[in-house]
Structures are given as C-alpha cells and as structure tokens.
Image 1 (cartoon, helix red, strand yellow):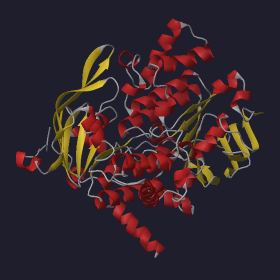
Image 2 (cartoon, helix red, strand yellow):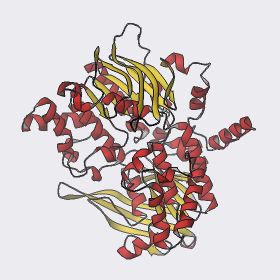
Image 3 (cartoon, one colour):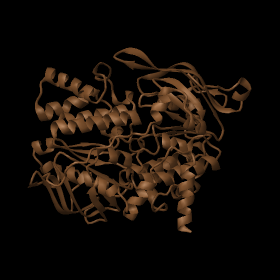
Image 4 (tube, one colour):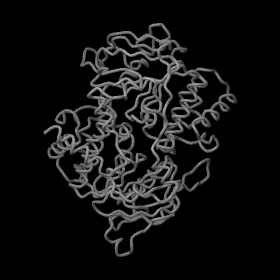
Length: 551
C-alpha cells in the first residue's frame, strides 16, 4: 500500500470525521464473512473525499458506516467511527436518530427506492427540517423551491407537488439531493448521486452540488465508480479494493501519478470499439411508427410522432437528456405504457399496445432490464428465486433443471453461484444487483432485450465485462438490443446505430460512425462535449466556455 498518510492526533481534532480500523462483516449462508478489513479515513469540515473502486469494493458500506448504519445482514465488527466526538459505531439509536437528517445526510444511489411513493416531493422535503426544528413548514417549502432551482429542476415552483413516479430518474436524483440538504448538514454522503443523470444534466448537477457544499461548508464523502466525475468533485481520493484501502492522495496527484497497479487499471479509459456492421441488408425486428404517448389519457404528450427501426441481431442505442423520452419509449415497446397513436410492429406483426393483451410467447420474446435494480428486484426473494421464476414461468423447468440453469446464468454475469444463490438483494452492491437483473432477463431466452441504463451502476472494469458479455450473447443467440444510455463511451462500445432524442422527439437516427462524425447536430454536439474528462479543471473550463457562449 502506498501514499497512505493518516492524520496525527493533533490533526484528528480538526477532522469532522475520523474512521480507524473499521471492520464490517456480512452474514452469508449463516456464516459471518468480513467484507471491510480495517479501513482508516479522515475528513475535514468543508472537504470532499472521493471514495472510488470497483463494484463490491466496500465504498457504500464505508459511507453508510459513517452514519453508524449497515445494510441488512451486515454489522460493524471492529474499529471506530468518530463524527465530531461521537463514535457512531457505538452510539445509541436515539443519538444516531438525532444526527441523521440534521447533521448527517445521505443521497442514495437509487432515488426511486428512497422516496415514499404515496407522498408529494415537497411534503417529504419538509419532514426533516420541521421534525428537527431547524425550520417551520412555510420557510422549509420556500427553501425547497430555492434548492430545486439551484439543482436545475424544471418548474421549481411546482415540481415539488408531483409524486415520485411523475419524475424521471435524473429529476428524482436531484430532488433527493435537495432533500438531503434541507437541514444544511455538516456531513453529506453522496452514494453514486449522478448515475441516473445524462451527461448534460450531470454537468449542471455537479456544479450545483459543488456550490451548495462550498456555500454551507459541508464535508462530503463522494462515492462513485466514475473517476472523471470524482475528479471534478473531490479534494482527495481514496481507492478501495475488496474492503481494503489501496491508495490515498490529493486529486491532482492521484490523476497525474497513481502509484498502485490497481489504481492504474481504474484510470485506463475503456477502449472497446464495436466493429462496423453491415446494417443495410438486415431485416427489421422491431418498428415504431408515428407513436404518441401520454402518462394520462388526453394529457400532455410525452412522446411525439416517434418512428424508430431496430434491425435483427444488432444494437440500437437511444441517447438523450433525462426526460427526453428514452425510458418512456421502452415502456411503450414493452406494453407497460399504452401508445395513444401509432403502431408497434414486432417480427412483422402488429403488437397489442398493452402487455396484458399479448400472448405468453410474445412476452417471453421481449424482455427488459431496468435502470434501477433496487426497485426491480423483490427485496424478500433470494437470488435463486428471482432468476428461477422466469425459468419456471416461461420454460417450465423443474426444480433441478431450474437450479442448474440459474447457476449457469450467474456464471454468465460473473457472479459465483456458491456465494450469491441464497443472498437477498439488500446484501448486494448496486452493480451486483444489476447483474442479477441481466441474468433474470436472459432466463426467458428472449429475442429482443431492452437495456435501460444497465451499466450506469457499474464501475469501468465491470462495465466492460458486461458489455463484452452482452456482445458475446448477441452473437451466439442472435439477440437484438435496444440500449438506452446516457454514457456516450458505452454507445461507442455497444451500438450499431444510434437514435438521439430530445423532449419526446427523435432528433436523428443514423449509424454510429455517421452520427459521431462531424459535423454534428447542435444537440448531439452538446451531448458529446458534456462527457467528463480525466482532468480536475475540466468542469470549470466547460462551464466558463458555456457562460462565454451565452454572453
């Protein structure tokens, strides 16, 4: 281990958060297994520390431990977590409850799983400041609108009166960031807060988060697998692997000269380049013709005259800002949202617009992998049951056949069956949950798979392995993918053709090569220029450039 220089006792007194020898264990198959092995960490007031590493490295476990909290099936088994003189590892429930939400806040990876679906956003916002007595109801509502505006949420005066399901994933993530800041906490843990955001929205949110953290002098742990994003946010970086610290340094030093080989592999830019495919003669498996769609019958159109063709055995990537209609298009194809106008044609036959009107074989042939695995997986079912259900429902496998096939599917998504078959979703990292979702979709042996941000929760190394896996399966099984993503590097790696969407309309559709070659459509150019770079000054330079264009 290199470049790990922890604070002296005198310096510790200046820290807001000091973690020493943190150990966390998880219960697996009735046995305790240590997953965090003696982590040390220091954080000063107003400082941002980036925690980075592969999925399962222990980043989120350490972040939750800073609040004195662990996932279900886990517990802190050693070390201390000193928050401003209080050991959160040993504090009483009442002590921790008094701090959480007021002095320590948390922004989760999946906002959709964190909001109460039965209450409006602004009512959930005001709960913390009114409960802790930091603000009255009227002032809290005014502060909510101010934060919504700072975080670039649309219609900030009225968006708080919507329910969570009425917002896109990116909008929900920003609303959750506002809610976490409601009591102006001393410490905030950002756990992958921009994974649900497209690149253009991410720019504004990152800038807003930095501004808010600096304005309130809030210390932050910024957890992410996206190294370029961490570079824009963090004063220092701490690299984790398999529950251990690999390396710590200030951001500029870490980016310029990482010492450890593992850190260098994380810094390597993904260089997958999908070979050019001959799309001219491929037949069309899925076709949308002049589709309109609304969330409410007769309401505002969310999709407007959408026409898309997806060719058999190939990958069509759909890109665009949060709220552009990407996921709504996927819901229309799958029959979860009925189109108000237009036709959906699959394998040459018109599909009923609602999934309940489709036969079992059609349902099997079209599968969907969702953006947020937290809400897609039943928290009360074990992995074996989650993957086994479609095997039984669609293929009629018996118990022994189902078990054998489930093990094969886990191996395909690079999870050890012996370790994961009997786990619950709450015992998995975000990336591991997403791989379970992929395995479940493959279990139905479909022809057409809708991948809705399937790699957004994965670190670079796992991301590459999943893309490699999807590409291999596509060749072996002649699968067709509709691949929704805001990661343009992923588009380069996976797509044959690309559709760009904006405000519910298709801006352009072309081959990957043609679309990425200049001159670009104005909106496509904005997407391309918004991809974070491995330069700590990149965000500042981009914001300055765009402000100059406006003026």
